[in-house]
Image (cartoon, rainbow, N blue to C red; front, side, top):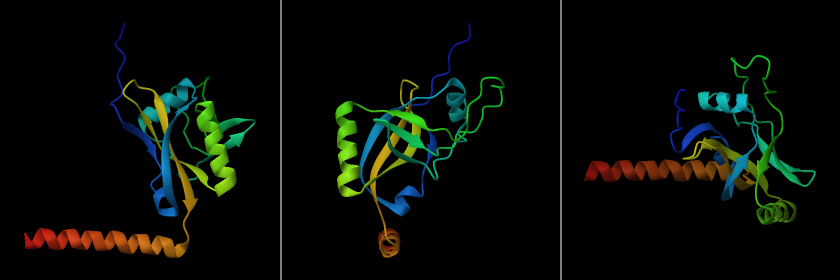
Amino acid sequence: MAKKKKAVPGQIAAQNRKARHDYSIENNMETGLVLTGSEVKSLRQGTASLVDAWAGERDGELWMFNCYIPEYASARNFGHEERRPRKLLVHAREFDRLLMTIQREGATLVPLSIYFNDRGIAKVDLGIATGKRQYDKRQTEKKRDWERQKARLIRENS
């Protein structure tokens, strides 16, 4: 019998880089993810995308919508839908807290990344976010540029 390959701890399968530009992330939380076998195999290849993904409540449960996990080529008969809603696993107390935050403060749940933990289980880093306006994005960019320039000047003078 062949040995199972262990996933590298913290191996990122998909990342939403645009989320930090479009939203200000107030809080992060780790959630579980219900996947089929072909979805896990496809995630391990690292071809998934979280660009337009979002999370929300449906029928009293937390779901992730519009996450693209491409079909796994070797799973011909038992494949999966690429953009199907996927259930997120959170404790009841966390779910209630998230629901209150979304309803009261108008926050959005944005999946920031999908990764494999040290046990090889797929997890989602879910961010509680509020949308940025255009001038906020410009301010963030100016601040980032200034920090880069400052670091460069310090390096040159040292």
